[in-house]
Image (cartoon, rainbow, N blue to C red):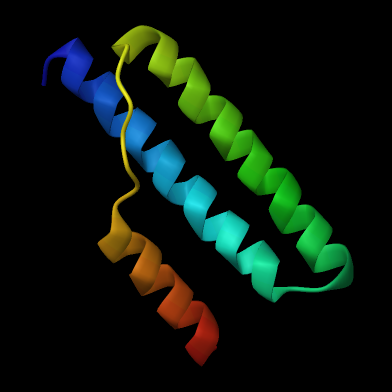
Length: 75
């Protein structure tokens, strides 16, 4: 896999994970909410680091976001 494709994959993973943690934080309270917000902020920072290299914007993988949010709702 070429370098640019790897960077883009990492970048998309970061924005997807940001969305998952951010939405989970919105459903949480107290200490869990704070921790999830902190993790989502880390993921967004990672996304922006990769963005400097790719020079592109990416949307989250909505299927993966939906999947993890559904699992969180079930469990």
